Image (cartoon, rainbow over all chains, first blue to last red):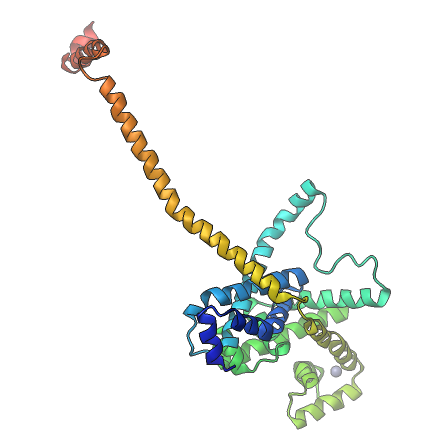
Length: 191
Length: 140
Ligand SMILES: [Zn+2]
């Protein structure tokens, strides 16, 4: 099925085509959300929302960009919105703990029942994610799309709506910042 | 090569995106410098570890859950579109009811009814207040 056929099928509400689109892009979308959120349940939830949005707003889709670019863009925007909401609601956690006796489940779990090696790996991951999360929003987005989604500069520029040269510069700054953060960690032996 | 230069090029070196000359330069420095070598190993072990997380797949039957979600969203939207229509209708009805009951209540207080006395008692008193000079009022 060509991209044009897919778009036409989606726009006419063809469920078979919608299934095809979900099957084709679900892994990419889920991984993008995972990269942003580091939380399986949240990533799954947002990935579902992405496809609901695709189905509902495909009528407004302009064929001058690729379908995959458009879907990535929705996934990034939804993940960033979720992150903003999450950080806004973070200050409420002590109150939740006060009233419910428990806070939102940690992204990484308690790790009590884990073997030592797995626990160590998890802790390293946790620190690394903290370093990635500490990057400014645009650097983080560009970094994840390049490093883990392996998108080209051109594709990242299309997804994020920036010029190729600003993508290059954001990516460079992201890598420098990340390396600095990891250097600090290395010196303090925090990983 | 100085350590700061090695530090600057390290990520690119590990990604293999440096030019052949620069790549060899960093490699030579890493052979000689224990501290840079330690950090390079650390960076490789940790920085590239994150990629593992991305080999995850969504749980099976993802499409079924998306479809269920879509149906529930559609149902909610349908409900809210009914609400959009019904809410103004309800409030208009309430407003009309208010106006109607106001008119009914007013008609029971019209002249000729038993409440006429009350109005007669009030109106002259109010009128007198307006006409009486303030000096007289104060002198009394
Ligand atoms: Zn050195």
